[in-house]
Length: 310
Ligand code: NCD
Image (cartoon, rainbow, N blue to C red; front, side, top):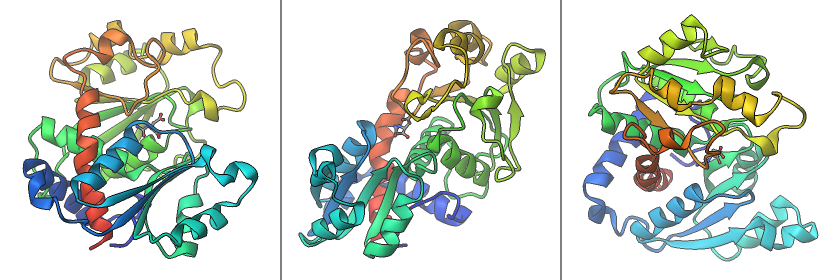
């Protein structure tokens, strides 16, 4: 394995191998404390990040490697230096692998090809965010005590992905990952916030409203709801009338969360818009796994980093 750019291109076996390895790492991280000894990992973030960036840096440290930090806004890219010139320049300092985030879908795949570096995608535009999908699957399987090694470990589980699917790389990677792992996935979003062509995701069910009988039935039936951030920075135009209206129709409010089974769990990749796509009370409730997701991000990213050196 050299690169981790998409979940779509991973086989079920490769996906399960990453997850199974992540469980092994979480059980005994010390065992891997020298795995990246002598390796320099470039953290190349050309789009803002809190969780993903810090968890990758933490993962490198726990594996005994060294981080080379890079922040797009504070670099010569702000003077007009191209992406390729920037990467080729940093490569001269001795880089063994690169973790990269970029606001353009496809930019990471291209850089991987032209630089020849081992690359992990930490989120490219609206395209994919593979390690987020890995940590989400990991968190669900841990919660439900499901083994990563058996075929279709999420078979029989119903997962709702709620919100701004159109702009969400988290949704795209998760649809691929959850369906490959055997789960049933329902997307709930206004028509304007869904990709116009859903033929890439033939296995998913789609609903537009939560307050209809079928919407309420779905809420009462699912084992997990993954709430997506409303990605205002990627919206060029009006996709819905106002944030208040968005919450009214598509937010995971306290009232809607009360319809969930008591065993159902709630995920959100962060950062949250509290009071818009999710009520604070719901985000902080006992059913929420949001901070667990953050913690588990370190273990799956350790697995991803080791994976690119295999
Ligand atoms: C996500 C991202 O950047 O794609 N955040 C994250 O990595 N935890 C989701 C988002 O920004 O909405």
